[in-house]
Picture 1 (spheres, rainbow, N blue to C red):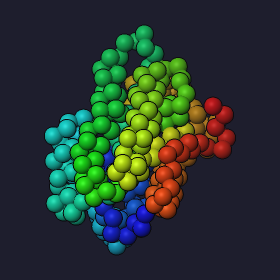
Picture 2 (cartoon, one colour):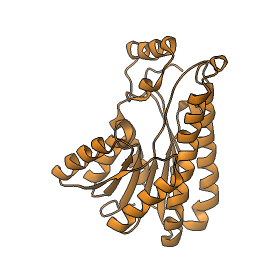
Picture 3 (cartoon, rainbow, N blue to C red):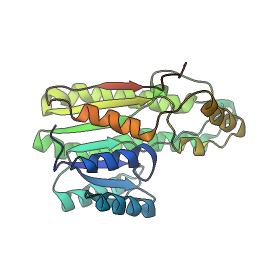
Length: 248
């Protein structure tokens, strides 16, 4: 895909992988819709992108709410005309053993990690079908391939994202000329650990920083660009990206 002048929607764009990807897309000439709930951060990112010569729009969006997602997509289309790239990146990773019954955290993970992907896809897909082109990226995880104690519900949500991505590719790739890529990162230096309310697991996760060099958000952004810039006849369906010294 020739990126200059294309239009992208990035969810979870207020920090981490989403923000890094938005910056790199804008540097390639992509007009970027920055979607998240923290509008102040989005507006700061818009200023940063515009100062560097790019184009971006801050969109207040809660991916859990279909009406909010649709309104955000409508706002982006009104501003820039269409959507060529969707990066479903919003996600949460609270960690706890199932027996602690933190059911509110389970529900929130299901809402954001699964329903958020479905809501954004549902809002953007008709646009891509009509223009017979587009590229949808979903952020899964190493937890979408493997299962870890304490991450049981999180792993379940990310396995769902991986399965949805492959099924979506099978259904819309040939039929509508839309590419689908599932990105599955290992340990990345982002805000995900801040969602962990269990002190034991929080300490354990933070301790991993002493055991390996975490990936940076920019590394995942570069991974997305690699798949995006492949020839139109190439669909990089999955990208499993780990730190070199990650042993699990």
